[in-house]
Length: 89
Image (cartoon, rainbow, N blue to C red; front, side, top):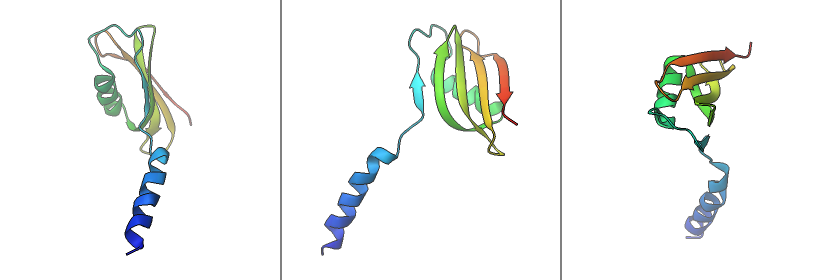
C-alpha cells in the first residue's frame, strides 16, 4: 500500500527532468510556423530536435541526425525553403 504514494511522488519529482525542445518565435513573421520548420528540417536529416529559434526571417532548427551528429537546418520563415544545413563532423 505504501508503494502507490511513493511511486506517485517519484513521478511528480521527475517531471521537471522531462522538458520539450526550446522554441522561440519572437518577431518571426512569415507563413511558416515552428512546427512546419521542424517538419521541413526532418526531411533534411534532422531526427531529434533540441532547439528552435527564429532570427532574421529564418527558422534555425537544431538537433541531432540519425548518426547522432549535431545538425542545424535553416528554413526560410517566408516560403519554407531550406537555406542551409550545417552538420558537425
